[in-house]
Amino acid sequence: MSNKINIAVIGVGRWGVHLLRNFLENPHASVVAVLDPSLERLTAVKQQFNLDENVLLTTKWQELKQIPELSAVAIATPAITHYSLIKDALKQGYHVLAEKPLTLDPAECRELCFFAESQNRQLMVDHTYLFHPAVEGGQAIINAGKLGDLRYGYATRTHLGPVRQDVDALWDLAIHDIAIFNNWLGQVPVKVQATGTVWLQNESSPALADLIWATLTYPNGFQAYIHLCWLNPDKQRRLGVVGSLGSLIFDEMLKETPLTLLHGQFELLGDQFIPVKQKLEVVEIKTSEPLQEVCDRFLNCIINNTSSKVSSGWVGAQLVEILAALTESLKDNGKPVFIEWD
Image 1 (cartoon, rainbow, N blue to C red):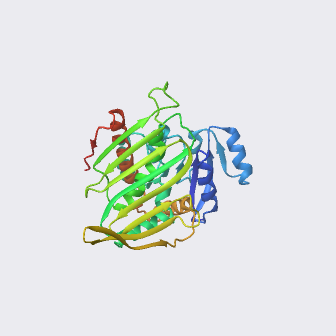
Image 2 (image 1 turned 120 degrees about the vertical axis):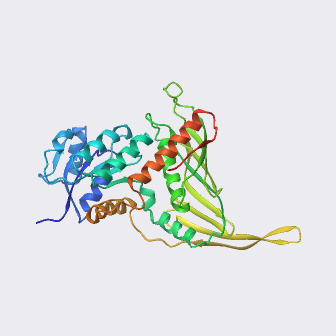
Image 3 (image 1 turned 180 degrees about the horizontal axis):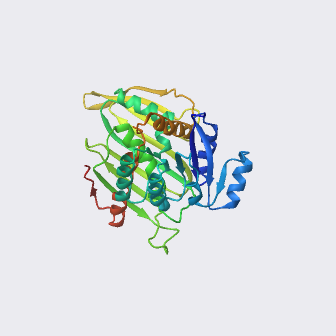
C-alpha cells in the first residue's frame, strides 16, 4: 500500500507546469490528475512528462471530485479564480497549495484561513522566494546581528514585461519584495504609501500602473523603499537591507553569488566621518530549487499535520492586506495608509 500523497495540479500554464514537474519528481507525491481549461495544454504536458495513462487529464473541476483517493491540490490559476477554487477544495477535504497571491481580497483570505483551520486542512501559499537559499541565508545573518542596528531597506524589480492585463505592476511584482522584507525583519508594516504612473493601459478600467514607488514603514521605524516597473529593459531583481555595520544584498541576477554582505561603518575623527572596516563577503548558500522546497514543505505539512511557519495561509493573507493598503494609497495619490493588525 502506497503512503504517497495523491495530488492534483490545477492550471498548467507558465508556473503550473513547474509545480507539476516538482510533484512528479517528489518521492512523497503521486500526481493523480491535471486540470486545465486548455485541451492543448493538457496534451502538451502529457507528452512533455510522459504522464501515465492512469493520470486523469481534464478541463472540468467536477471530475476531480470523482477521485476518492485525492487528498491535495496545487492551484496555479489566475488570482481572480483562487477564492472559489480554494474554498471548494477545502470543502472537499483537500489540502491546498495556492499560487500567490492567496486571493485579491483580504477578507476572502481571512475567511479561507479560518475555514482551513475548521476543516483541519493545510492551506499554504507558494511564496517561492521565502524558500530561496539566499533569503534563508539572509534571514540568518540579520538574526545573528551581523548588520548591527537596522536602518532602512530598498528593492528594485524591473524588466520589459510581461505586461499584465488583470492587475497592475504593484500586484504583479511587489509581493515578492514585501515577503522578503517581512521575513528578514520578522515584522509586518504598519504604514504604507504608493504612487504610480500609467503609460500603456490608460484606457483600461481601472488604469493599470506600469511604474510603482512604494514605501513600507515597520513598527520599529525601519522603512523599505520599493521600485517596480514592467516597462524597463534594465532587468533588476535586487534587494538590500542597510545596518550600522554594513549592507546585505540579495541580487538574483548574480546566479553564482546572489547574496553578499558589504561590511563597512564610520569612525568619527574630529568632525570627519571616516569609512572603516570595508570588506565584501560572498555568503555561501546551499544549492536547491526554491519551488522544490515549497512542494516538499507542503507535503511535509500534510504528513505532520502542521502549518507552514514560513508561508502559511495567514502569511499570504498578511501580504494581501499590505497590497490592498498600498492600492488604497495609490488611488489617493500616495496618501499614507495605516494598517492595524489583530
